[in-house]
Amino acid sequence: MTHVIITGGSSGIGFAVASIYAARGARVSLIARSLDLLERAHADLAQLSGGVADNIGIEAADVASEDELIAAVRRCEAIFGACDILITSAGIVEPGRFEELDSASFRRQIETNFSGTVHAVRAVYDGMKRRGHGRIMMISSGAGLIGIYGYSAYCASKFALHGFAQALRSEAHAHGVGVSVCFPPDTETPQFQREFASRPAEAAKIMGTVRPWPADAVAKTIARGIDRGRFEVYFGTTLFLLGRFAPAIRPLLNWWFDRAIARGGNTAVHNGGVSERRT
Image (tube, rainbow, N blue to C red):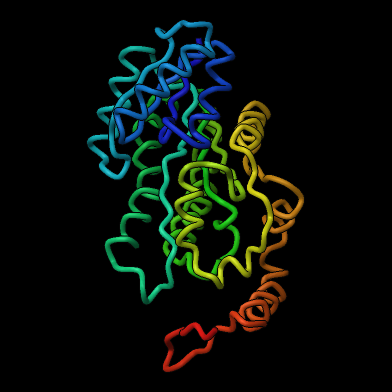
């Protein structure tokens, strides 16, 4: 029976992906920081898997702590066997202009979004290599394809995932281990609601009013990408084109972003390098 380990699996995209695999009858292990959320997710997934709670495991751990996360993965594997599919969904986003974003916030996003993924991969990769099979899906973001005003730390962490995935794919291929990375758009999750409330006005102006995707639609695309062995998984035509042609069109996008920020009543006026809002 397939064993799927999902970091950040207690809510949002991670939980939606877990729901798909639970419905398929897989053994699913969820790793997240909040034990309360994990217990709630466990009960919900047990219903989706026909009331078979024995196929759902939970472990509380912070992905930013390598020792803590590896220990949690080992406990999951001791119960359900070796990991066949790893999905790294744990992540945080704290928007803010660079000069207003303190070092602790910047570090949290790098350590959770990038280093947390590296820690999870390290926990399962050697075993996958020895067995000659396994799938790893890293969840990046549309913000991992192009820099966005007010998201310097988040973009940095998500761009880094793409480079990590590219390099690891080359190393893993000869050993039968598949590596994938996906770039979801804004998604209807509890975290998105918190993020949206603190998103700088300039970022909102650039990103427009596009409706976020439902978490289950994002999850279905991710699962389909894993099933088909795709390396890069995009969501919709815009992100696909951005992923394929970003270097060529980035100057045009930067020009458009700069104009969008400078237009109208929300003009950003720069004074001594500090962006001030004038209304």
